[in-house]
Image (cartoon, rainbow, N blue to C red):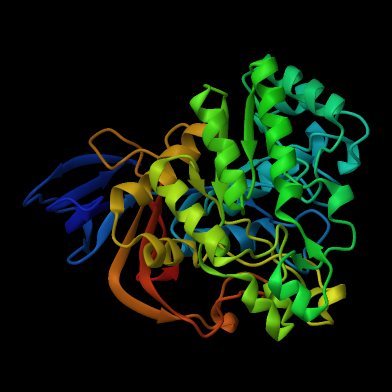
Length: 425
């Protein structure tokens, strides 16, 4: 295993120092380090963060390898500064058995670019009718701890209660896609002034808020862990704020696109801006940013959702919802939060690693710590060109936008997956 000396780098925004990586761990941290056998990486002007961790990634394999594979998605993640991602269950077949989650887990290990932690389905086939093999997935080689029907809401309150009760036995988490389906039937975008003007059926904010309110009450009653996926409204923030004040075991995530883009983007009818939950208003964005800063929202998660060309380049009504996110998330965070390195590390690495129980991830570089880290050049600016992305899909809402920050290197247990901004393998 090659040793690496990262010279003159700022660790989570602190004064420049040196990092020596040897045998998969950070061996030394301090000024003026030397090691004759180490490959030197010039860290001047760079910031070292603990490797990013994504709680919400769609890798599409098995079943939709035309849109993404575990390998291509892992490469996109590494280029985005990630060392671990949690892969959602809405594959084909659905990841609702031990066999499927183990397949995804093994594909991640074979790719060797990031640690791929599968998320298991809550219900069989995501149908919302009966619980999937939660215990078998938890006991499998993949050691699943988070379960979600993402893309579908677990709408039946009795079934949701049973799921929360079941996973409590092994301190598991139910991650809910909060959408009351009876309020969003036929919905095309956020319900508001823009949808009225465009004549598109609206997706009301209350459809999200009602499910979150119900589920925090269920989690409180059961004493179990609830995670709320892709929070998108100001009302949801207030429900979460009240629940956390009562001590409910609830965590929540927000996506980069819900922190930056508004429903005004739908005026072009460009399906790249169609997403679920939909882009909301400027007031919602302001509330989400404030909640992220004060901890009501715990995590930035990408909801990386690659789609094949035919599923996106069509009429708005027929387009699949979803956007790419892995290769741009850190840049969006930097654009939205500024160089608040400790906050970025907390929301994009430490907290998501803690929620997912990913040992060795989400730990700031220090002697003896596994060398899972990323180096970013905060002064760089880059223009997003879809054709240059590592994902097999091209549905990025940031095409030709110029964003701050450039990932220079990513290390997974001391081995580089990205060097000089390029994937190593």
